[in-house]
Image (tube, rainbow, N blue to C red; front, side):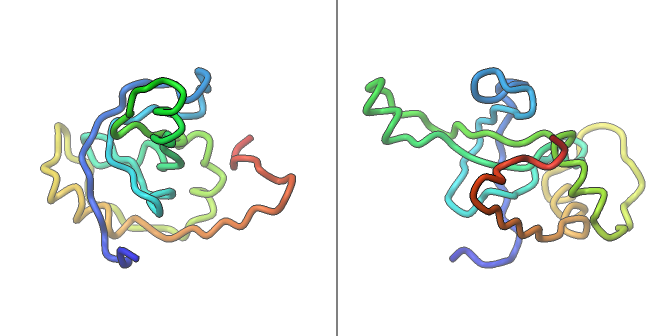
Length: 131
């Protein structure tokens, strides 16, 4: 268990579409570990643009292709999870700053705006919020 303190990884959006060109997702090149699902994906200004949802199963990809994918994952775009965000308690945000924000400052700002979301999906109810 990695704890509840903030964890940060740097990466990039490698495609604006996810698996099978699904427009609800972003393809991201960032290290994703088990338990990272639900982590927020921030843009250069520190705004939440998506939520980390999955990564490729490296072993299965290797078995089928002979190639071992590295840091390839997917994040659900904020538009697909708007219903969850709308239910969040109101938060106070720092004034918007133009231009890229240093990583340390971005993390400090984001910590106050992040809250845990626990979702329990029953059989046959595997739908994303906002669908």
